[in-house]
Amino acid sequence: MTFTRHFAHWPPGAPKTLPVSRESVYTNLVASTEKYPERTLVDYYGTRLAYADIKREADALAGFLQRHCGVVKGDRVLLYLQNSPQFVVAYYAILRADAAVVPVNSMNRTEELRHYVEDAQASVAIVGQELYERIAPLHLPHVIVATYSDYLRTASDLPLPDFVSATRATAGGIAWRDAIGAALEPAAHAAAADDLAVLPYTSGTTGKPKGCIHTHATVQATTIPYLYWRGDEGDAVVLSALPMFHVTGMQAGMNAPIYRGSTIVVLSRWDRDCAAMQIERARVTNWSAITTMLVDFISNPRLAQYDISSLRVLGGGGAAMPEALARKLEDVFRLPYVEGYGLTETMAPSHINPPQRPKRQCAGIPFFNTDARVIDLDTKAELGVGEVGEIIVHGPQVFKGYWREEQATREAFIEHDGKRFFRTGDLGYYDEEGYFFITDRLKRMINASGYKVWPAEVEAMLYAHPGIKEACVIGAPDGYRGETVKAVIVPRDGGLTAEQIIEWARARMAAFKVPRVVQLVGELPKTATGKILWRELQERERAK
Image (cartoon, rainbow, N blue to C red; front, side, top):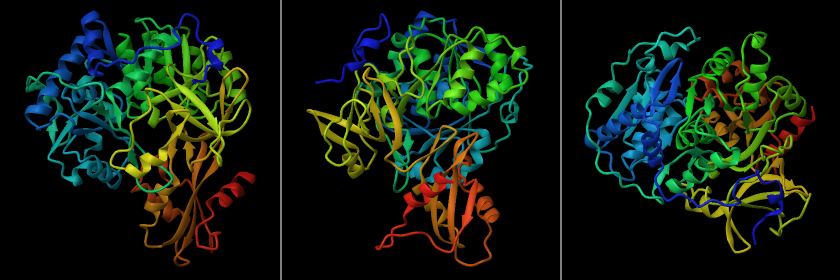
């Protein structure tokens, strides 16, 4: 049996199912380059790079990875870059070399990076020069260092981030230009559909971040369907402002457009004026964004100066869109905001709203080839219309398991109705028409401006502070970010201040993980066995 209640509202003209590609993700770049060699693939602050340019550089870098760095099939290569032409080139170069991409959040710092390097067993990293000092202490054998301004080949009046306009200044590592310039020929491409392609890391309720095993087939399962879901033509121009190291930005802002031969307008850092200027100049048609981006964009007092009428598709996810904001967006853009839902484990969407009939504050309907159900938390029995339980997902985009984490993998899946379903850890229900709605989280997680913050990871880092006796991290309401990180701390003595804790955390954690609010207390509520009652603290915070 498969859930089909939603088929009555399927996008007109789209097939109900799609064959799952057995080609490597790299072959998408090959196919689009053969069709459109001179078409712009990347528009980077006014500099335009054609499909043929990107493929040529990806192949050259793949040759360097293999012949100079010793990368062989199945190796993991860290990709520690901000959105840029180099990210696109490096991503496809790693795949061309039959290796796997380990995308790393550019906000991560040295100790966080250490875990990715050690767990993925990586010996090669490709990094932005502004991030090099964070990875240098880890002494990887090969670090290729990219300077973003190498790709600013056209004078621009767009507002550029300082790290983008900076000239090459890093003495260490291998210069990107030298790696490309070596023009080494890669070996024949040998990656197969079931080979590891991408290893994005996600944190969880306990322990350190875990790598999600995504093969070429699981990545293709959400790369190709966008074309059919939205009816996009190859002339689509996509604003790529979401981070490409995150699966949503990776798929909606890079892989799917490349498959369909589209142009991506790349922003290395969010800037509302730059986004508006590029929408006008490049005639952007498609934009996937998170709520905080859109709030900032429509709050711009200069917005009326820009022509944004070229936009045809506006969508995103990460957090439910508030009703009032959704109405405001429709007034500004004359477009519905099409929400979707997915996780790192599902390589972005498992659900998405049909573009012709979206519902607000709704995860959408199951995506191509996806079966989704709702089960009772205790009995695991399947629930019906309107009944709240855990959402489980079965489909070709579901990851194969957690890297080197057999127990966590076993716990992440459940056998149901003769199929292996992924347990999302999200609570929700579906309505009479088969649309799914998220109501709460079973897993302990904070959603800050679309970034997932796992309290257990932040707590583990806080315990490294010599002045902290106990720590409990919860989410606190935030008018702009949706939620923000709050740490409830029991200090070892009376001399520690909230400000000192925040400053200490800033030096050691990615910015989005740093507690914005710190509350010092004498003790934390606990069970009889000494377990901290985090849910009680969370409920108190929500009741304020």
